[in-house]
Amino acid sequence: MSTAGKTPRGRRKRPERASSGGRKALAIIIPILALLVIVIGLWATWGGDGGGDPAPTTTSATKEVLFVEGLRRSEMAEILQAKTGIPASEYMKATDPSKRGQALAGTKKPTSLEGFLFPATYPVDPSKPVTDLVDYQVATYEQRIAGISYAAARRKNLTKYDVLIIASLVEREASTSRERRLVAGVIENRLRARMRLDIDATVQYAVGSWKAELTKDDLDISSPYNTRKYPGLPPGPICNPSEDAIRAAANPLPSKYLYYVSRNDGTDLHYFANTEAEHIAYIKKAAANGGG
Image 1 (cartoon, helix red, strand yellow):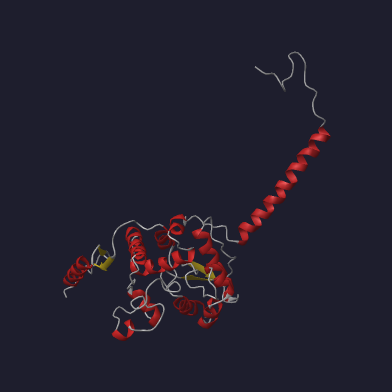
Image 2 (cartoon, rainbow, N blue to C red):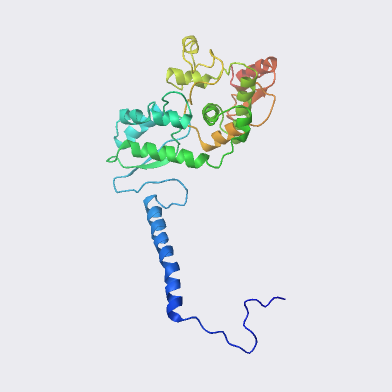
């Protein structure tokens, strides 16, 4: 057994000089205290709620504004105006196609912030620039996706922006975690098979309304968002999806399903099918469920 560093038996170690030890201790403690002051300051600035979101400092004028998942930015603008008095036009201008959106999406031209405006409850001070809220939403989006793996998407030649677009479709189409992953899988299967997506929610986005019944004119609209008419993904997200929808889009549940239709039975669930014939049968069953 080694005795390195030990005091030989019968001999007492000479104590360190107090003045030297004090200087060493101060040299260590002062930087630690300075770092602690900085950390406390940052914690206070960002809210210190333990949730990890970059929350701004609140004031007596702050109003809590809730943006639920699945809203278009135009809907967020209307909610913001109703809750705070901030003109909807200001929020729309702050989230319109820009170099910032282009950088976030990785596109070749200016892109809006649709999809990057993370849905949550935000403290908004009407006296502050609306860009403070937009910055907060984008920062929250980036924080929430930080732990998501995009490896599976990359293997299928899908970009992060592709995943966000798919997530926005999933958000409007399904409400449970498992069904979101199944719907994401159907979308990928149809893309791989070069089939049109035929998703009504994209048409609703194109016409600017989430109306339940689409007319023939709606379905014929000449918009790149009309997946009833044009193949492939729409050019951008159709809403601002939740973290759960983004996770589903990044990691779909593998299946051979190519079709799905709402059960129309009050469960908010869907029937999934491999073939068109099976899908048609489910459509008839869904109609019967609804008394049609």
